[in-house]
Amino acid sequence: LLSDSAVLSLGIGNDFTITHDGSTGVDITSAGVMDITTSGSNSNINIDPHGSGTLALGSADNTAVTIDAIAFSIDATGGASNITLTSDGAGDDLTIALAGATDSSLILSSTGTAADALQITASAGGIDITASGNNGSINIASTEASDWTLTSNASAEDLTIALAGATDSSLILSSTGT
Image (cartoon, rainbow, N blue to C red; front, side, top):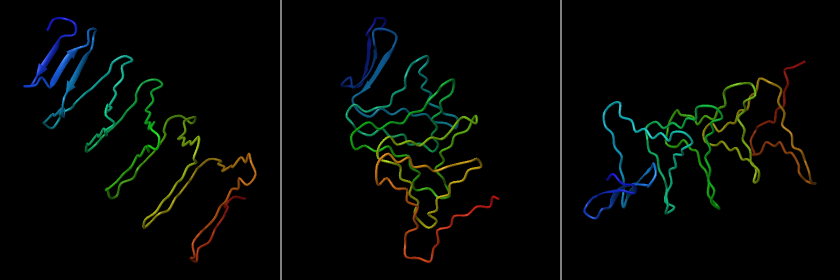
């Protein structure tokens, strides 16, 4: 196996291969499921694409890629690091969900300098925030000057603040300032 493009084949039908790519890399191919398992209290699986390398998880036949773990973390460290989650198919959704857990919260946060911000942007379609259940409340709080602005650019683009439902409820606007 000391030549470029050398192949190490395993299994009765050679259904698992490790192939030198002819330069400085390797391709690992399996005709079926490929399990990577560690055991022990401090077992880790580390995949580290050095330099400008990329770690890509994908499926050639459009099946799901699932990561199932007790704890799962994606960290971007270093200068100008980004984490991007993208769904690029027509009609596809990108869902970040906390399901089946009790006393747990889904937390999106931005920490760092005063110039940092948590930005939620929709270039088309709008943004819907819905809370339901026993305590389906939505709280938005700020310790700095804030505003809600609709910049209308056509007729009938109204800003509506409404309290709906046939209950003994009130719409309250208040100020404790002077």
